[in-house]
Length: 486
Ligand code: 4AD
Image 1 (spheres, rainbow, N blue to C red):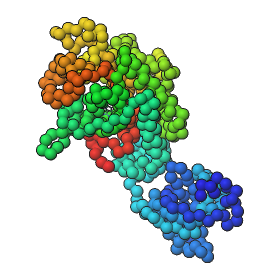
Image 2 (image 1 turned 90 degrees about the horizontal axis):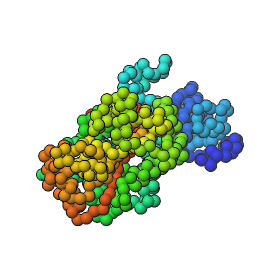
Image 3 (image 1 turned 90 degrees about the vertical axis):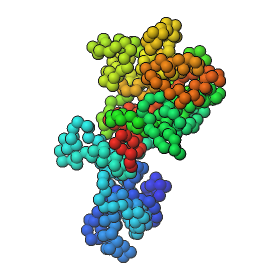
Image 4 (image 1 turned 60 degrees about the horizontal axis):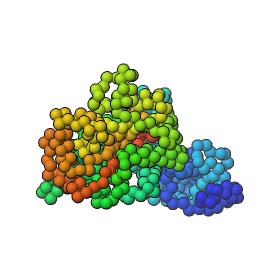
């Protein structure tokens, strides 16, 4: 049929070509009269009109039946392709029409769908305005995010959601192709662990044959253990579980982590440079290969363009400089405080004003706000004070888009004794259950090169690239504290 579609002159022939098309999606069906009904078929790639007219071979009963097939049903039709008498509007295949001779319902959708695909082509209402207020006069009210997510199978059918899923597929491919070309190998690490990964409280517990196990909060320890196991450049794409009861527009309890870890030669800034290049490769790929998809989604939410830095010119701002920028703008913040969410957003605006970009890196976070396994900076190591072991900075970095964190990474401690010392000193490990960390720490007893890495959140990047108001819109079947289905 595609060939016929391309050569429309053939469709003008009297009688036209006779075709049988399976798996057509009914977008709309209506009875015009006892002798005539109209249907529209569509999916993400096409939309085509069809007519069923009573004739010697088409009974009135069939006309009536065709006009009442519910939206979203799947049908097979036997039809003649013709040029329409009048051009039809708003279809991607404008100059062809199907004249149906026979129609079979392959899968009948229920007639009262819980949400309409058309509703999923529109924005979700913003959290502080009731849906009715947002829709313009005479329009149907916007459907709430929850209702749409409850009926995600229908919701995902909208072209905008297909575009989001395609973009996610693209980000994973761009991530992997960039790193493969630089000698990284894909790793698979366990997601059921005998100990809580990074020692924090935010892990899901599960029963494991009478013992306790935990869902991996990150592949952190295992990617480092792989570096020790002579896999010097590793990456992983996999699920990450967080038992945090945070009901925000940017937190999930399960997300897709894009992780990498590598041994470096001289300095961890080699890793930052590679990560910056990686991110620019992803953005460039999205800009050139996913322009249609990106525009389709950004239009729904009126999102300003994402301002990218030139290659090699990603702003890399030391933590104390970011603090100074905030203070200059009247924000109160301590020397070693982590940024709050509003402070991060403010910093995003300041960076945009100063450097003209929505993408930047903050380097050298304070010791106190990073995990115990983070390598202190050379200056902090040189001025070590046992009475005040958590003052100072680290070789760690966060990457930001539009004032929100998308990646977190660092150089890690690769000396077992020092790692044990940091575990005891670090505020988040007042009562370290060291036996849980034995396998991890042992990896460094057996020799391990200096290494650094980072972890990106797939749904976060996609949300921020597209300017979506909620991370759930960038998640295929989202999981949050209030949602474990569908
Ligand atoms: O900052 P996070 O927690 O860092 C780690 O997991 C480290 N082990 C990574 C490393 O190599 N040092 O998570 C990394 C990224 C964040 O920047 C964010 O993009 C995403 O994962 N992320 C979340 N995405 C959705 N929902 C959540 N609850 C997320 N928490 C983190």
